[in-house]
Amino acid sequence: MNIIGPDYLIFGVDDLPASIEYLTAFGLKPVGVDATGGLFEALDGTGIIVRAKGDPSLPAPLKTANMLRQQVYGVASPADLDAIEAELSKDRRVTRLADGSLETADDQGFALKFQTTKRRALMMPAEKINAPGAPAQRAPNEIGVWEDMPAAPRSLSHVVLFVPDIAKAADFYCNRLQFVITDTLVGAGPFLRPKANDDHHTLFFIRTPDYMQGCEHLAFHMGGPTELMVAGTRLVKSGVQSFWGPGRHKFGSNWFWYFNSPLGCHFEYDADMDKHDDTWTPREAPMGPEASQIVLFEMREKWAPGGPPPGAGKGPKPE
Amino acid sequence: MSGAAQQVITGRYLCHIGDVADGIARGFAVSGLRPKVIVVRKNGHLHAYLDACPHYTGGTPMAWKSDAYLNGAGTHLACHSHGALFELATGECVLGPCLGQSLTKIDVTITATGEVFAAI
Ligand code: FES
Ligand SMILES: [Fe+2]
Image (cartoon, rainbow over all chains, first blue to last red; front, side, top):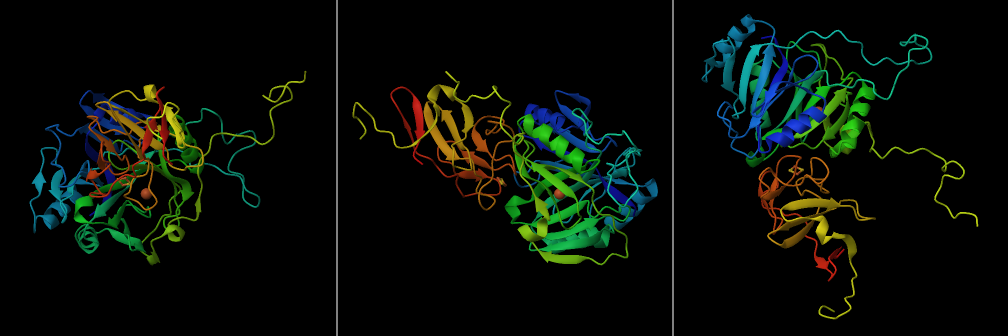
């Protein structure tokens, strides 16, 4: 089962115009979006599909107030869809759609869809850095930052779910869909990666009561920490509320910056996540501020040391 | 000393009543206080709460962008972290992760000239 990761996350929202404004400000590209919503794409074609909560084309809502309606997973080939259908049909209803994709639900009622991935291969350099002792990554005269440098989300990275029963969730994704646990924050839950993706995690669970089941956050990969901070700074300047960050997580090593959103969950920019293979031994750490980040910053308005140039200040004027 | 011709105001200045139209919520920074104070006016009544959602310890800011505190229909204050909804008049969470908990209510005094002061 070569599951690659989430292609799309589908939301049924309370305030569609606000959500459209938000997804655009976040740097996703509307594709065929109209007054009923639509797809907002990262550079590789993964993204968020948003519609008004009453839209009849949406999958059924969760039993909670959460606005997540469906997680659409991309798989490598049609043969993987056949394997998933064979496995999950053993104990649940799996619907085969006209385009070959599959619809079903996990053990806790999260709606799932599997499709031959729609993501496009990206050919772009990562953020380049120069450091003593290592070959320069940027050529002479190649500058690192400029005011209007691009900083667009590249790919849908991961989704984090509030789940009532972690053991049940981990069992379903690991034993039925061949996800692997990379690390665990004890007291919160495990990080998982699917078989056909070497990212530290595309899925993370946080244990919660039943009435909170839903999406805690979702994240998009950026080209590096600088792009993450440039995109986040632009978002805050546009008025969006920062929630947590910027900082760098310990498990996964990814840079992070989380923001509030009108889609009922946080949106995260992440960058420079660890890669793993099957030789990795999972770690454990107790959930808490120390385990969850190596560094944390808080944005402030741009400022520079030193007073204003002579004569430009508001100080008392000489008589 | 309410009723006195010269009101003595001990609270912190938030805004002028004209800054918050009916059906609108806005957040105001108060120096020395980390959360903003949300002021919301509905059917002529003014309510104020700390901009601190009770879902996560310590309280977290609730708008998704500046002054965007209401749900789509404008019937409730909403936390744009995980979608909790709060009654405008009481601050009680009626939907979402902090069900049954409440926002911290701030008492306000409105002067004859419309200045709104918070009792903090
Ligand atoms: S922090 Fe407000 S709903 Fe979760
Ligand atoms: Fe994340």
